Length: 165
Image (tube, rainbow, N blue to C red; front, side):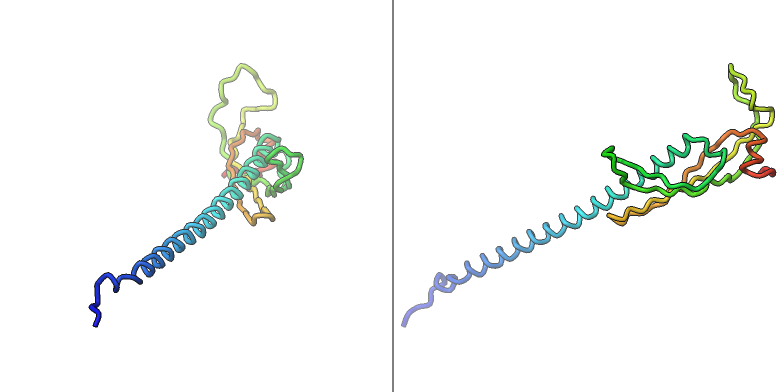
């Protein structure tokens, strides 16, 4: 009769331990691959949102640099972010809303006298809303911008109404 040696009992253990280690390594690589794909999607979504925000801000700057208080109206503005002569986003600007108007306390000191500015000037506060919808990425956002504009009494009555708020 042959004696049973402990060494003979361990012959298959190396194979089993090796297979378990290979399985654990495969699971780690697979989970790393899945997490990197998820992170890539998150970064892409953030980039799309940031681009849409930049387009909205660019369109708001265009509106604010124009005499929008002369005749407030809704408008659509095409924005080319990367200067490739192709419009990347269409920004919908809602009609600017005069939210409040208060009599300006004092005229700012100036060396130039403006004939259109009378003694009654108004600090008017405007809300301008820009909406962006990106059909490619699905990113959409709405940006509100508040701005104060100094208007004469005649201009204020034409665009904000006759009562002060």
